[in-house]
Image (cartoon, rainbow, N blue to C red):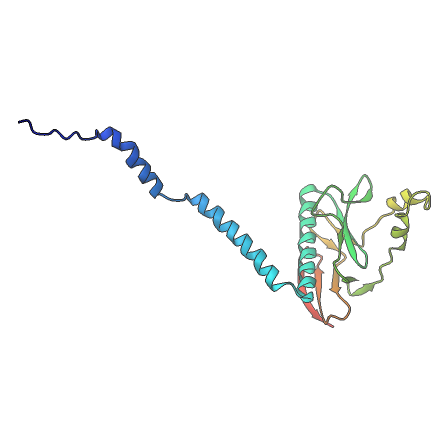
Length: 206
């Protein structure tokens, strides 16, 4: 009587299956984990902001910090491009100008250095070298009504002149302070720029 023969599966047939198991056991790659962590962090940030909300004081501070960083960016671009920049302030907005073809022009085609409107009921006060400046933009506002109403529109564009000059030498002149505030809110913030190109933000109380 012959003994039963038990056939074994060849080793080379087992290899793909066992290899697949080992590959599955490796789990996520480092890149995949990093992507997940970033997504979770973003969702957590938005959720936290939605729950907490920003106070009026926080909004003023954020706008002051934004102005500080934009001025620093304009200074860096001025140095890199070897071109003079400027800042033109109104009571509720500000914009950056660039000196091109022997005249000042508003920076265009730049999403970062575009004109900035202040949020809510926020306003600003400008002080040049300890001298408060009364901002009057009535001419600029009237020039936006159309050439048929204001035939000297092009001439006024040629006469644009910033209150602040950002020089390619890395200097800011004149030194200035801008106070951002909302009427009825005790807390306000100063954006302070000095001749050596340093820019900072400080809290101020009425």
